[in-house]
Length: 245
Image (tube, rainbow, N blue to C red):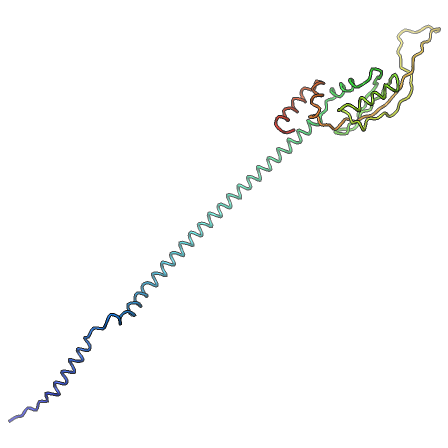
C-alpha cells in the first residue's frame, strides 16, 4: 500500500506568501507620491514653452525697437532736410535784404545835380556872381569849388553862410579860401572917345569850397520835391511804404 506524505503547512505557506506578494505588488500607490513626477513632466513641457514665448516676446520687442529706430532715423532725416530748407530760405532772405539795402543806399545817396544847382541859385546873394563851379571827388566825398566875383566882402560872407545852412552841403567843410579886391570885367561894344573915361567900382574876387552833405536823400524828400526831383522822390516813397527805409 502506498502512503501519501503531504505537508499542508508547507504548501499553504507558499500559497499564502504568493498571495501576499501578489497582493503587495498589486496594491495602488497614493497620488501624492506621483506629484514630483507630474511636476517634473509639467516643468519639462512648460519651461521650453515659456522660453519660446519669452523669445518671441523679445523678438517682437526687438522688431518694434528696430522699427522705432528706423522711424527716428527717418524723422532725423526729415528734420535735417527741413533745417536745411530753413537755412536756404534764411540765406535767400539775407541775400534779398542785402540787395534791398544796397538799392536803398544807392537811392539814398543820390542828389540830382538839377536840385543842387537850384539850391545854389536860391542860396546865392544878389551881389554875388559865380564864374565857375569845379567838382572833385566822388560818392559821399564830392567837393565843389566856386569861383567868381562879388560886390563886397559882406556878400561873399553871406554866400558862405547861406551854403552852410543848406541841407545839401556840409556846413563844417564850407569855407572861404580867398577873397581879393579886383576890377569887374566889363564888355563895351562901342569904342569910347579918347576924352571919355568911365570908372567902375572894384569888386571882390573870391574862391570858396564846400562838400555835399551825407544827409540821406530820404530825409530831403521835401526839398527834392520842391526842386522838381519827382522821380527820385517817388522811388524813395515807394521804398518807405515797403518798410525798406
